[in-house]
Length: 135
Length: 345
Image 1 (spheres, rainbow over the protein chains, first blue to last red):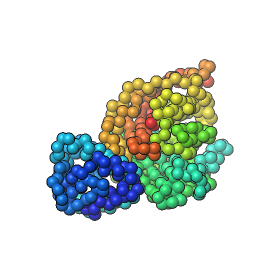
Image 2: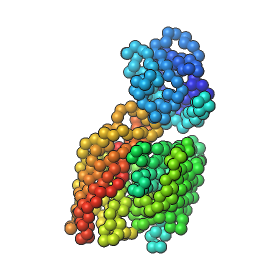
Image 3: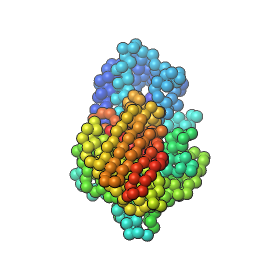
Image 4: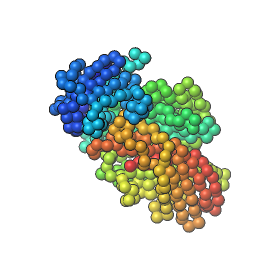
């Protein structure tokens, strides 16, 4: 399972099972376009009524995130804090400063939803398994 | 074997609501154990919990919290989450299993056979109750629901714990057990402080064990229950009720607080500031007096999503040192022992 597939599957679960968190996330994300750059893949998350995970950007990317799968897993598992990841150069975030607050709140709403949604657990486990295979 | 100890298996049985119970969605129950091995410098926390309709795959849940703490190595272990159907529950006694772990009571002892899902921790422990249990089955109100409590304040623990590749054997370690059940929603207007010190010292040749409890609203302003129960040997020696107790929290614990599940840090990245640096407690009734102070030296937060909106309910587990001085039934005492306190809000 790629990072894009895992994120797309988690968003679908959120929309179905945790609509309040999903709606809050879409509200904060607005029409923002976030580009993710990992060693194995690149993809784009586009905000809107529905949040889409796309292989390429249909419009200019406003936020660029560079990281890797181990860092994503470490953040989810609480082995690494977001600030530590940035300071340790394991996660780069490039965006206009005015987008940082809505982006952080959208990410927080996403975490709220995924922490509550039971159907996210097998997705995370499959993603974690894929990471182990690549170690 | 005294009758009350023989009966523990029945007293400690599950209280799973029947199918179709309209309150099934708010059902919660757990069996909690602490083991303090003073010789090895090892603390262990085990909590097996059931929530919701465990007869279904998606409306119920069974969780196992299995943690170890060593001064030089910190916390290990974490939370393993299973769906309700993964739990095996015998409703006639204590015979519970989830994942590769089980908790049973038979022949006068608890048997804890534990395996964390990631293989990091394992244990095989026998816990023999050394005191009579205390049952607080009066539907104590918490928020819109209620909770009940069964306590065994002192058990003697033997067996082994494996932490990574290291195996720690123990014989006669101090242990504590409680069992809570009821119906409530996480995020309702309640909180609690709870703590224990098993076999803190000897009083006239018998071990002295204490359990403290304070159930409050979220701000801590309205007290629903406040007690300090003290056992000498197998028997309850003194129960200090709320009007006999004074307590004061001071400062904020400044050490690192690990949070589980780890995703809690993404939901609320703020530093944990809800653990006091110190608690001072005085309990008095007639000639009986206990003056106690507790200073935590390690803390871990179990964060549970609120059921009443966004955000987290914080269950702060701490280990630390309890200093006790005073007189009970004419026996003076003055001792400092490792103990555990939990702060929920």
